[in-house]
Image (cartoon, rainbow, N blue to C red; front, side, top):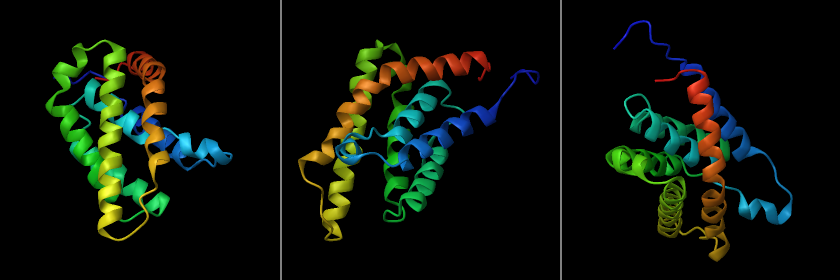
Length: 162
């Protein structure tokens, strides 16, 4: 690797911080039910763009931070984001070839998978599972993937992140 190649790791960290802020930001009433999975979107993008730099450890770290910040069961989001990062990295060469709308469907399926894990974990520890409205963030994540993909790609190219 070229030693002169800029890394700009702070940009990647800043996008995860922005995702955390958007996750924690209070929303009005029913909008809370539609909150997209910001951390998953950002993780999937960076795992697709630079899988050699952003992977399972970053997914686990982001998940632990999300667990602490949201007060969820410690390790729940860490497990989910670790598995998402693993799956994306395993198939990143294929997913990159998909048009953006097919990538959006893939991201939606990943969010549905994480929600299924959440329902399973909550059921195992006898917590309420949330019902059908808990599946709505997958739809908003599907709709937000194309513009966020374009935005993050523009940021990556502007800062020459490799």
